[in-house]
Length: 379
Ligand SMILES: N[C@@H](CCC(=O)N[C@@H](CS)C(=O)NCC(=O)O)C(=O)O
Image (tube, rainbow, N blue to C red; front, side, top):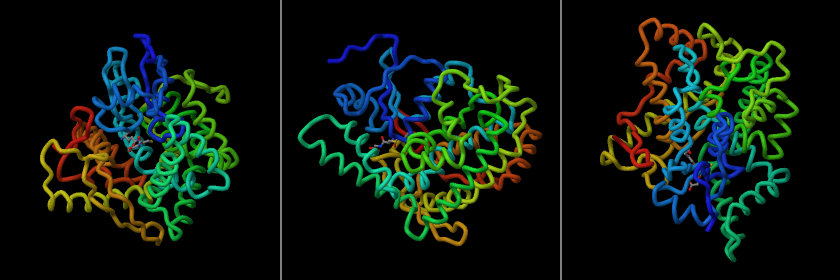
C-alpha cells in the first residue's frame, strides 16, 4: 500500500473534474502541501469512501486523517482555521464573493457541459484519455470509461443544453467571457489584487472544462486572453500579475465592486435568476409533497431528485434539473446578507439591483440544508 507522510494532505481529485479545480486552486494559492490521487486508487474505496459517504471528488484527507468531502467544505475547513483570508470584510464585496461561488459551481454547468460534450471532433480523444486514466487498469476499464462518459454526456442535456437551446447557451457564455475579459484588463482577480472565495467557485467551470478542453480552451485563448491568464493565475501559488504595472496586494479599498464586474454579473443574471426562481418553486413543491425526514440526504446520489425546473431565457424555454445544492450555497449569501447592518443591506440592495440579481436574496427553500457527517441533509 502507498505510504503517505504525515504532513501532506491527500486530495482525491481528477484533472478533468469541474469541482476538483476549485479545491486544488485553493490549496495551491495557500501553499498547502498536498498529494493528488484519484478515485481509481485503492485507498479511495478502502479508507476514504466509508467516511466521505459519497464517491465524489474533490475529497480531502488531512494529515490527521480527517476526511472532508465536497469542495466548498474543503475551502471552509481552511477558511475557518485561518481567519478567513478569502472573505472580504466589506458588505458588498462579501456578498459578491459568496454569489460568485454559487454561480461558478452551479450556474455555469450548461456552457461547461456543452463545450465539453458537443464538440467531439476536437475534444473526444482528450476527454477520453482523462476518463480512462482515472479508472484502474482492469479488464472492465474501457467499458467503465464509456459508461461514465455517457453518463456525463447525458448530464449536459439534464442541465438544459438541447439543439434548441445551444445557440442561446453559447451566446450568453461568449458575452460573459467578453465582459470578464474587460474586467480583468483592470484587475487580476474578481475583487482586486487577491482571490476571494468567489474566484475559486468561478474557476470550477472555467478550468477543467472551459479553460482546458481543446475546443473551449482555444475559444478562451482567442477571444479572452485575460480570462485564460486568470485561469493560469488561479493555479499558481504566487500572485502572478506581471502584466499589471500598478499591482496592489489586497481586495479593492472602500468595499468597491467595479462597474466592470457588475457588467459580468448582469450577463450571468440572465439565466441564473430565472433558473434559481424556477428551481426554488420546483423544489419547494417537491418538499411540500414529500416531507423528507430531517437528516435525510438533500444532495447527491443518496438524495431523491426533485425533478426539473422550466424557465425562459431570451425567448427559449429551458428545462434544467432543479438542484438543491444551489440553495445550500445560496444560503451563505442570504445568511451573510441577514447579518448586515441596515446601511450594509441598503448598499448591497443597490448593487444587486444594478446587477439584475435582486431575487438571489429572497429565493430560498422552505427547508434549510445543513452539513452532517460529510453529507448535505435536510434540517
Ligand atoms: N458538491 C460537490 C460536487 C462534487 C461532484 O459532483 N464531483 C463530480 C466530479 S466533478 C463527481 O465526483 N461525480 C461523481 C459522482 O457524482 O458519482 C463539490 O462541490 O465537491
